[in-house]
Image (cartoon, rainbow, N blue to C red; front, top):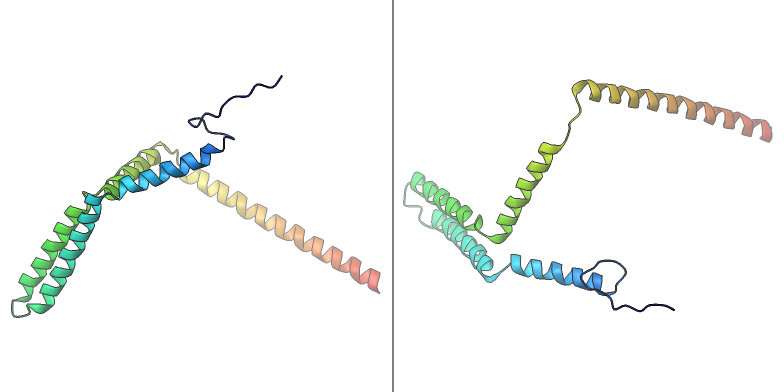
Length: 147
């Protein structure tokens, strides 16, 4: 007798609800990442930047150094605003995690790299010679059959 069990959505596998649940999780994650506060921060940063550019070119009666310092200050303020958004926080966490994982990697020594490179060169040369010989042999066989 076959036992019929209800699908468990929290368990991955052949359940039809699994892809839909995964899509919902990704969609919810994207909605959380781009909340209203983040949109306001991005809009404010863009508005400040374009206002700084406008001021740089419109108020040309002020000395150049003041205008440059003003635009640099606004750009720094923009970066401060943007670095407090959820997307950038996620990016910082991702890069930190990537750095931690890179520290776990066992890198090859210089001698190992040279040795494997030489092995690759030797194998490539041997295979080229073998394929060249096979080509010549097959070409001679075809000429013999056609003559």
